[in-house]
Length: 278
Image 1 (tube, rainbow, N blue to C red):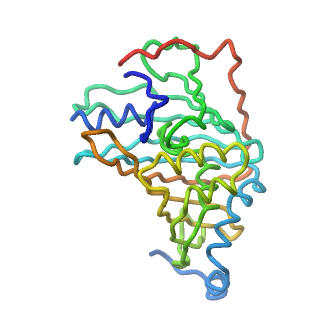
Image 2: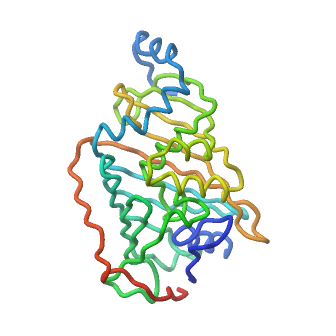
Image 3: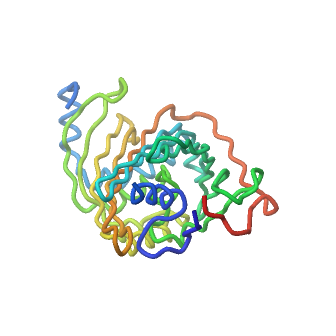
């Protein structure tokens, strides 16, 4: 499919590919003391700090799921990999869904996440197998919250810097870990103002490019205040005839402290030509 790096009001690249596919066809309660402490804290202030808590944690493994719905069709993109929060670098393998007829499997896309940039290998037809495609995330109308088919884990946390309203739902269990569940709404423009330098521009672009800058979310924090699961709900304009596209992006974080080795491509390894239609 044609490259859509500068499409206004919608996601591009991987998410754009999946959009074409769309158009074409309470758990266990914990101790009373822990629950009481969570209720006593200000949920909004707690969530403003979660990105800093991840940076202090250093690194983790991550699993992502992005559900996109439009025109009665729903598809899901999945990713898995590692992220270094102190260096703002990550590596994910992204799996696209089969074609609507179920006859074509897409090759996994390797994505490298860096401040202000997204690098993709196996991006699409016409790109040599040994080359990477580089996207300047500050130029994307969704700030790369949707574009790559995953939400950058640190960016997902920095969205919560824009939390305007939040409530403490309660304590539950997530993969055997006691977590505190919060629900609220974040404002992307406000998040951009408090974000790290690498995410400031992309989040500001998302605030202007999405159908709404208000992002509903559910987030689950462990006893150390680290995100274990966060689910955002975005909405962007899918085109003149497609209406708004609803996106639910879920990020799971685990195995904190895991070693992360990410080497960004050299200039000679980046493809500068046109991406052909698939």
